[in-house]
Image (cartoon, rainbow, N blue to C red):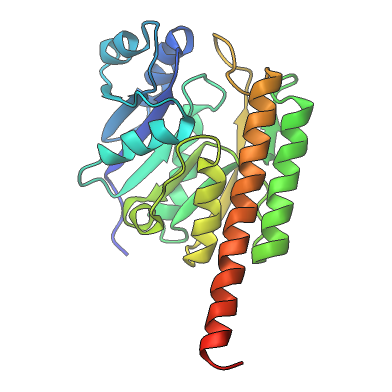
Length: 244
């Protein structure tokens, strides 16, 4: 298999001027082709910080994590692989080579950075986030038979495989949608251990707010159940068509 050498990094960002600069500096220390910051309607200097660090900035004015990721994906050109990493410094860009390696070797199409397999700094993940991060992989295993350990946002995927998934979710369901569709499309999936750190600046939009935790949890569960219903309906229609 041809070795992948063209890697883009997409960094969804909303009001992350305090942490983004150091994240981009660390990303630049890793050999990648492009760094794309998807500005999700920031009202601070996020876009200015990104440009000053040499990153490309694309606008995603519709608020939502998935919306920012989709804007970044739309900006891809001829890259072979894309890495998604958050702008708050929770993930360590120095671990990116380990994330990319299984795809470069041909052992994977899609790689999840698993915090459960790795290390979580004290205080970096709230109790509701830990509970949700166990429940969602459990449901995926029960429904589709694939055992994930995490929904971590630090992930890498072949661009051709990503395009086949037809990603759509504009907000909290983005990560779980990708993981469900990866199983449904038969992608080669690998998890590697990563570190989950306390954010390097600014305030969390999800894990440290009741509204964020509830909203994210509900959307993730809704996404799982919605795809499960779709699969069940498709199976029923196929059996009906065969006269079973």
